[in-house]
Amino acid sequence: MMTGWRFSLRVGVVALAVITAGGIGVRTGVAVSTAAPGWRLAVEVHQTKFGSLLAVTAISARNAWAGGCGQASPSVPGPNPVPIPTRPVITHYWHGSWKAARLPATLHGCVTSIEASSAGNVWAIGSSMNRKFQLSNFALTLRHGRWVVARWWGPGATKSSRAVGAAVLSKSNVWVFWQDGVAEHFGGASWHRSKIALPFPDRELQAAAADPGGGVWVLTGEFYVMRLQVTGGHIGWKAESLPGARDNDDLAGIYAQSPKSIWVTGGGQHFVHGHWVWVPLIEHWSAGAWHHVTARGAATLASVTSDGSGGLWLATQSGPAGLTPIVRYAHGRLAPVHIASGGKTIVAQALSSIPGSHSAWGVGDLNHGTEDLTGVILKYSP
Image 1: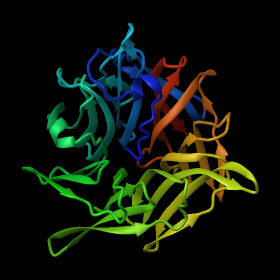
Image 2: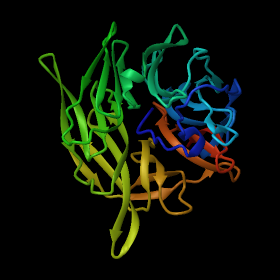
Image 3: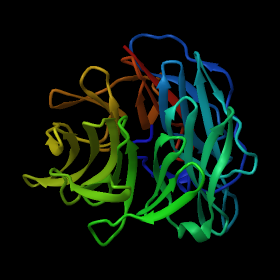
């Protein structure tokens, strides 16, 4: 589940978790061992160095997908370093173990979003940058158990705008959104492009989500959520303001828990009583309107999912020193979450609750040093 990907992987993969090529070595068939209740580091996905996992979606307790990318090194040594391209990574959890998926051999770049409407309808969205720093976007889908390129948008089509997310409702109803306000819709036979009329001059989209009832929600960078409206066959977008968003706030995550329960996260630094402090942002769609949720804590928030008990798991985006990668929201408070990782430094990039359970998956990266990252899979078990 992609709920507001943070395009900020730090050095190497950031350079784009979008620059193409290099090989990866994900260990296949890695079983998830049982452990004490709570969050733990379940699997280190052994890519080559400088990699991360950025997206995860859980279809059932026995079926989940995660995606990201890896590269051999951040650059070729020399007076004029040349970026080393990345290779996309998709790994599949099936009946107790994670196994690397085979992707088209010519595909480069980074998977940044994985969404599914069912076990047989899974899509992965990503971006790629060539050696001329020209950006492309791609959409992959599963066909007869194999990943294939469903659409490739080359440099001329993207105009240097990256894909920020997707809403997958069925095999014949898929939306892909670009940062500059472009929406690409797949109707089962062909793709159609349109522009979302945003209520502010600087067009920027952040993330997207589809709710179980068929609604599509798109998070912007300017205090609004755009909601898809279909009237008499005409498609339009309604801008809805978030009551608690303020200047200096960044919006980062959106989670469509149900048609009547949508969550948006973010936050920023605010000047309070003579000091700059980290202030979280949580907005909730319920009873047909957006409501600001008071959350005491010092952090900005990104990916969000249900904890299965009426609260939320949230990945932290930034905050004071010592901030935990995941926090839990319940009863108006954000509480730090311990992750059993053997003392290793982890960054959580995306979270997904497991349907029909109180468990959840998380993905991110393990920091071995300034630039040396490895993709990891996290697991919560009650």
